[in-house]
Length: 102
Image 1: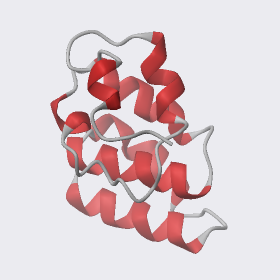
Image 2: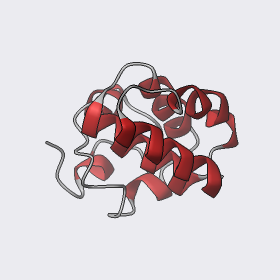
Image 3: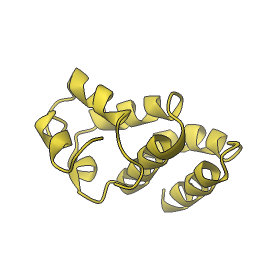
Image 4: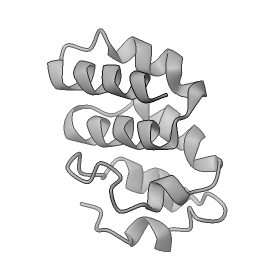
């Protein structure tokens, strides 16, 4: 599980490093990007978060969707729209909220 501050040490405030991509898969959905690291990350983080939309499930996916909402990444709209049909009602609901924030 990723601890607050761990994302910053992975280097997302500047350039995206491979470690960030690994950490995205470990984000606990309860973090919801409240620690602020995701909001402050560079534009490279948007691409990594969008890529994670197609690979994660459950709480990790919910955490990524919430991070996308915090960043208001309009390029993620197609991926979020797909998640509206997710079999996991929590994922579908969070995707709807994220789309509303974007």
